[in-house]
Figure (cartoon, rainbow, N blue to C red):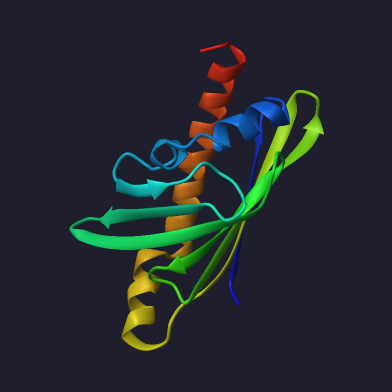
Length: 152
């Protein structure tokens, strides 16, 4: 099964990084500006909470439903329960590096369907697109952490 790992550092305590990721509007905040995201449902982050959304990849809508698990102040996992992938499990971990620095570790295990359906998901989620997405998310997380530490 393919794995995608991405790590970045944030100059903020783990509590700040966690607070940012636990906001109910976080999905839209973490979406790159050229991607349209329509959130249908996003429960407050807890074990068993559900997120339902549609990502627009150009003119094409991609509907996705995920369930959250392993929720703690140092991370959580979201698992696709409906969507374009055969399997998708994304674990977010917030690792304390020091009292003022946190590492965010994004770990995704995924599997494409076979045939044309798999071709579709491979076109939507190639490795370079995942790198671009998480580079954007690192930028947004660092910016938000600075603002939260300043009390904004």
